[in-house]
Image 1 (cartoon, rainbow, N blue to C red):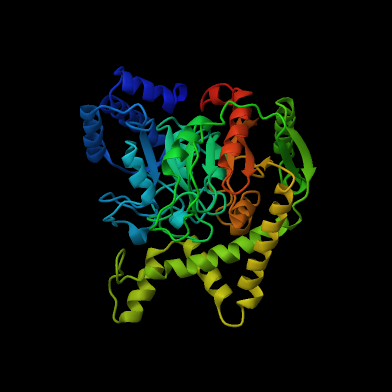
Image 2 (cartoon, rainbow, N blue to C red):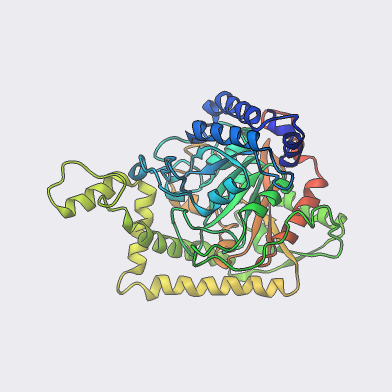
Length: 485
């Protein structure tokens, strides 16, 4: 199966008409993974026996016309729990963890007939921007195997961009869907906080984490969001807001829409070649009938320090449960209870996770809480207000997804501050709980550039409408790794 030259809707039509069976599609998908993944290293675990049985059951029952994801092979980021299928969060401490239930998003995909072909790599506990922090392997960029795929959903992005699957689930805490999507030249959608259930997602920072999708096309993203969105009683942060048909506005004119371009997103630290691509994208949106005007989001410069204090503090709290007692890795050669805790966590967690736990514990400690965590929470409010003021006059915000294209493997791994700054353009969205997507916007020196579109709360439909219009005005979907661009 050539996933570069098809989409979910086309496959759905072939499956419902009998031109293709779910079993045939799955077999071809696994053949593609076997041929491609040794060079890309996206997958950690394959789900072959269960996936084969599911495909056969779908073929026996027949695929319903109103279930576009039925029979479609998908990949799942390995911090989203899957019943009976190892879920590691790319961490030694959970290397052999087999959950006894499915995350809500996995259940929704199963109910829609989508087939989980396997679990894909990430930065350990989703902490990182390059997928170099995995305990198991370093995933490669689909366009250049000497470069990082981004992170933390690097495995999800590389699996889609290299043509192994059409859709993968990812999670986004500070840009972890959009940044790897930009680096790999695909569509990465982070929905509004609360739009998609987090139940069954191994928590990093609970007030920031959000499940989303990585796909090759905007329409595939809309079809996927139709399935995974919705209220969930098991998730207290899930929003009870009606779910529209996200494909309804695709193809509609964007004439009359107002788009804001923040000056701060094109400033110091952003590669001038990427700025030029975003200015070009703004001109294209104008040609399509939208108004694009420069605005200011003045508190953007404080987003990274505020984010890392809040995210690390929440991580410090969430990761207390990995103590060597209840489940997961337990150290050998321990003499007392303190040894169990200290050695299990010291040996089980990687350096980046330890760094963030220590930063978070310090930020929450007596004498420092007001100076750090409380101040960061106040900055978060200011950033949210910046967006509210802009959205009073505009339908959408646009800008680059990342300040640079994908960097070389190993280039930034010893410099955590430089690595953290790589998320400067995506982090404000998570702090404000807004929906956003990264879509392909061309190439710089043969490497993909991402255009970030940010929408109003729960207005993914308009976001996807504009993304689809921009996608249709370009031929970036036709550009594939190894091809001419």
